[in-house]
Image 1 (tube, rainbow, N blue to C red):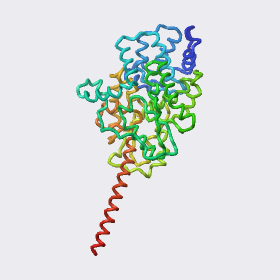
Image 2: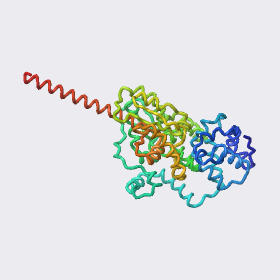
Image 3: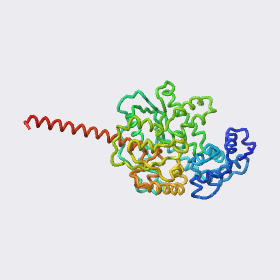
Image 4: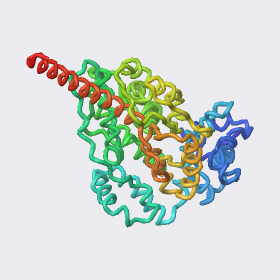
Length: 436
């Protein structure tokens, strides 16, 4: 698809990048077949091909309206279309550019603007944790749209500490909402890595990965988050104190892996950003290594049948697959739903800003997951976990929590076995003394 840049964009980085991406599109429409919003709405402009055309018109100087903004807002940025596209169109990068340019040209209604500001500032603030606790206390009284976003209170997680000093060390990104919403995920991650001989460190000052602001068209805010994390991590990275940066939320892992590209024209941060991106590993990427180290340490309890939901940021954004097969090696029975390639509707803040579409996509996904009749649904991203849990009574957990529970079962089994040995030894000793 050819685009003739207007004079406004022809000498800009965004214009040149977008033009190169648009030129790869051959307008075949295969992407629409795997686009969740196109499947639900049936509108060409709510599919990748239509949105590409809208961005092309913008680049060529056509009038930009609230309608353009709406169709871009409805995109989940799931990047399923990138997996489908035979021409290698980088749609995710293109829609980010389009949103940024439209945001600069179309004023949002005050209510929309306020909601987006609250999401950007509130979810990344130190006030989020106490606000969440208050929300959990009031949860029974809240309307459904808010209740869905607040996880029910679970028993407090013990502090996530390793049991011993490890020669191998990694940095663990704790992010913005996960430590408050689902602290058990970090706890389980530290325990599992420790059992595999890897120590997990955290850096003071690191926080939101930048995806939240970037996807809300706050380009500069997203870059500021990236720079802050690089500054926090660099002292340990520079001296080789850690071998990788491990991220247990696939959405954040996808974002950190893009730091190099996002900051490639920043003379102060470009080299460091590229180094950070190259060192970043989604926790799921460590599964083969964890299988090798831990397969003989696992004792699976009652929760054996798992339905695996692969987040879009894992399978489409990072192109990581096979987690179900690796978990099966531990002895779990793991299956994926028939529509495993489709988005569940969470997509970061999407489920807050587009609640009706998000709920429909969630219910479709849960329908296919429930068909597997599993004891537990497992995933790899905090947003997907909470979004799915809001529509089902089946437990939804991060896969690392389930693995940690199996390791814990093995630990308890060893203690139980040792106790029985001591009892038997004491019994034999007593019998011997009584001459029996």
